[in-house]
Image (cartoon, rainbow, N blue to C red):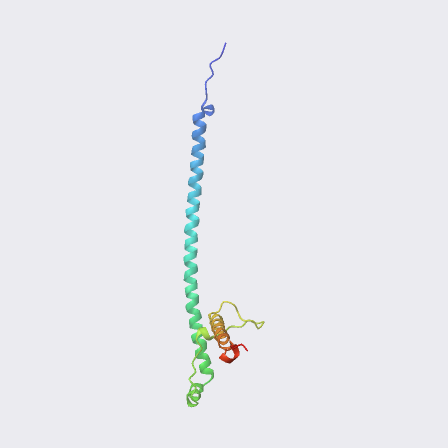
Length: 143
């Protein structure tokens, strides 16, 4: 004869599915919390990098001003001599400065170099347009 067996909770299919679903939900919750923590940390770091870049830019401007002032102090009377000779010179603007590395090559990514290249290509186009041979009526007539 067949015996009555009691089903334990461990063998119950409802208990098994509930435990799997609860484990999945807990894992999802933990991953979501970690994601938001990492996202907020990334935003904080991004903001601090932005602040430091702005600070670096202001310090670089201040350094250039101080360097120009120091150069002016090193050469007393230069401004008066320039005015006396009729030369209107001033400190170079950033788009006029070309930086060169230690090996003698132009440092890439400079606004001044891009401006020079644009002017050079425009001048080459104008020169090419002016150098076309001109046809005269006598040269094109057939004999």
